[in-house]
Image (tube, rainbow, N blue to C red; front, side, top):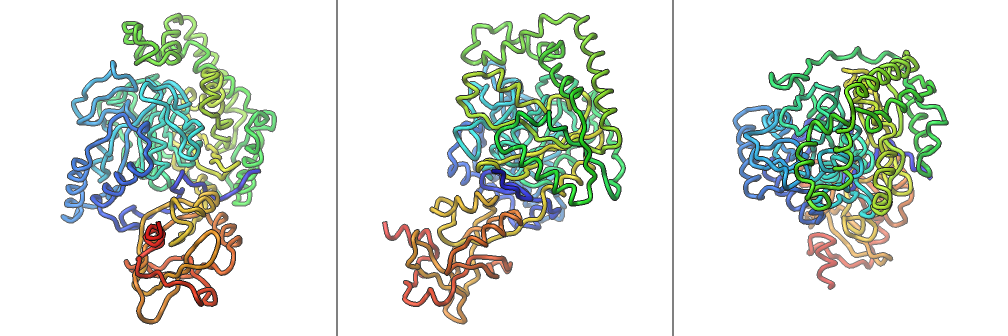
Length: 583
């Protein structure tokens, strides 16, 4: 059954729609954020995310320089954030592999997209794994290993921007760059419960990007919140004087009072994974309740157009990009070169110029008809993808499974559409995501609509059995919760070990003799928070708790009656330290 929440978390971190600056919201320095990021790398132990990870001291030095710029009076909109970059995008100091060791080359500097992020204050942590040559939507086509999903390691992460999405979803980095030709910046976002921004083609220069299909490629952004993802996309936008396909933004008009959003007819939603159609219907109802006018549309022409990306002569553009390299290194197929990727790219060599022009005309006619059917709609709302396969599913049928993943994404770049993927709840304990697709330069319009889906969130302080790694933590995660940061209470509290099963503590504010208690700040979608609190057993409750930095948050408190006879464990400073003392 679908769990309809106003927002969905990314592994251990959740999606926000607020517009506060990151450093204003969390009060963290770039240096402390980098240290926390590397601690998280060690904690999650997911080496397959990375093709190259910086030395921590090197990243700290960069972060210190960023902090110094802020201290000198610069306003850096990405100060306090760390980023990861898909390894088909150039980053100074790293080889660019595109997922192949033999293909690796050393760039002379950052791609413009990366340089603009750094100039805005972001610190780059490393280069992430991908489906080789950005050819795939599954995240398993890499000699560096399959990237496992942030929620369920038996399932795929989605691709091709697999490592970037999972690094964000697991809370290692705050944002990450990917690329998108067929859905690579949106499918991994949906499968890992985060935001994926695919801007209009050309808004962000692709200089310094290994091409998949040069005329269709986009640099994309992953983040756990819509505001950060959109902020990064805006900061990277603008021609660089080198990319001939770069375009100047022409923003679409603002939304009117009752915008029209199209949704597919039932026949085009019939082969979704179990529970996904119900989850999608919940999102449609939520949008309608916000004042959006919903119209059903037959999107068959768009789906037929999508099939041309791999089923027609357009695949020849992939051959033009890296086909000569693969043909010259056929002996590496099966080792450094993925066999499925090599087969797809080499197949484009059979396409003739006449085939391309026939397919071009077919695409134009299908696109015209498809867009005519969307007449009056500012966006098309669809599920981002069709299901969440396991790693074994992909191993058994690599091409067929991949093809299904791109059902709703493949046509966007072919038809020059803007698109945005956002989390929209959970089905069977796994993230479910939807996608808004609109006209070129409708990027901000899509973001306005997405805010109605993402919805409000609530922060919650936890100090005991709901901490990460503790037995009740899955309850928080299932409610859509996500870890934000480690915190401490003001020195006004006592902590007690309660006689409950499973064991948990009680936090109480005292007039004198209090101490600072270690805890964690989590963020939950409003609907998930309400369900979570309603299910709390006595003697637990929630109320205002002061932190040592002066903030007041909602947090776990305990009924006074339950503290009678309970052991005072305040001297340990926190629940984990107390439990550790017992063992």
